Image: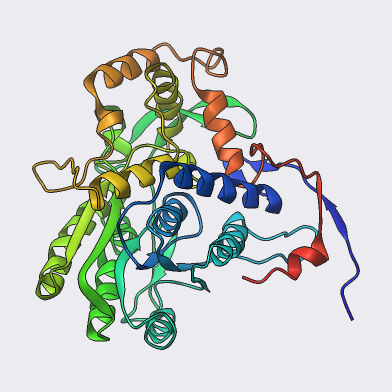
Length: 405
């Protein structure tokens, strides 16, 4: 017997800088809009079989979309998302992104497999490897590692849970942040992390699990000749160093770079490549809860509006793969990292951003002086609201539950 239809009204709900609601069909339209962006750019040579760890949203989803619809690749995504349950819990945006990406990819004749589970666990790794061997052609030629997680269980000690924190290191940092729920600017102090918190954040957000994935895949014999793997980092401007680049997240990114060198040694014999790409600042569910970071973003977005250099995740990652990873137009720094963030880091842009940040006040931050409107709109779009082309005001809960992940 089919479940009785229950129509659920859609409305955006924020708690601080955390979304508590989702528009499922807005998520579908957002996926279709990103696909259309990539298709308009045209096909380019690249991967044929790709695995994206953390492929349900933001940079991971954008990587999957450009890989599939730009390169024509079959894809696997591993993410940890919640399906619809009841009127109060319609599921997570990432769950719908996975569903509607798969539908679009299969319509285009591509394989799109979604694994919903904890990417840190051995069980998920085993499931993915088995699927590659039995159903996915036997080998992959691209692994994208794009994970932002709050915790990870120690694989050698199940009783120990590492929890990541977003804190400064050494001393407290005070600055202004934005409350998206209240549309308010407020002063915030970030307390320094303990040594144990820094270590835990490196375990969760560093490159340890990336290494494990590559080692397990290599051991299983499922990495193709010329295999590439890439992890996303962020450096940002000096104005954000204290709470990012020189904070706990920065320590984790440094650890990830050390992991890339270890991985490179593992895949040298298959002419593989382990890459670190320094991404630009974008609106994500993770970035909006980084202390003080949103203030920088609203200044940056305004200046980029004038210079024509603003990029959303799909624009940024499509350019990364199209031009740098596979296009032969690599911009690298002295450490060998890919630097698609060079547009953001241009001296003229950063000088203007720094000047604008000094002029932002609680009274004027939500005005044409800044890019706050764009920043808030992009955040709402992460959960399917204010997406161009999506106009649903209610959804059928029973229909949502029938969607295949």
